[in-house]
Amino acid sequence: MTTTPIAVTGATGVLGGFVARDLADRGIRQRLLVRTPAKAPELPATTVHQFSYTDQAAATDALHGVGTLFMVSASESADRLDQHRAFIDAAAAAGVQHIVYTSFIAAAPDSTFTLARDHYVTEEYIKASGMNWTFLRDSFYIDFMEALVGEDGVIRGPAGAGRCAIVARIDVARTAAEILTAPDKHAGQTYDLTGREALSLAEVAATISAARGTGVSYYDESIEEAYASRAKYGAPAWQLDAWVSTYTAIASNVMAPVSHAIENITGAAPRTLSEYLETKYS
Picture (cartoon, one colour):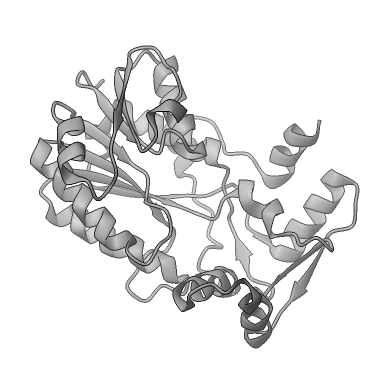
């Protein structure tokens, strides 16, 4: 069990918030590193520190005396890697001993999902920092599946019949909290965090349809259709590539393998999409 405070980033968001509350329930001392302190949850044995990934002075100050850091990846942006590098440098300078980083399934230099390439580079930078590390390679989140449904009740994207072992953020969070309380047991480990089933988007649509009691379907766009249908948002090229490659990565089946890491680490299996939706709509 760790005795120095654990630092948690992203506590004003969903995943970091889940982790912070889980640690508080365990009676763990922690520091919440947030951009907007007024939005931070009020938790026992917890202090709140304002910072940003690029403000190395503030980050270094907030991390002094911290043994283990839970680092939620920065928001998608053109300069996300620069933000990550600056923050990792600050953590090393502050004397942090161990980083638990939220990465992504199949992170690699040539990942089909373009944003997973950033995660790979970040992992390598952390490895080179001299700190101990544990990487949580999360699959796409169950929580986001309904956001894929258009106003017309259709999920559109070039995913074909590919499958993805989607995972709920709460299951990722409880796994992270378990690791954070005993980081030495997990040093140097990379865990794929998935749900316990791999679904196609047609099956995702059918499951959402059943939970809602309304018609939801899947349309398999061509890649050309996918870019054309998203061009109206005026997003930069890197973001369009990320959006479309969300689906092409599913089509490749690179995220289809089901991992048992969550159950092995926590003792409890992750929930399925139908279980998640049943709780939401009950």
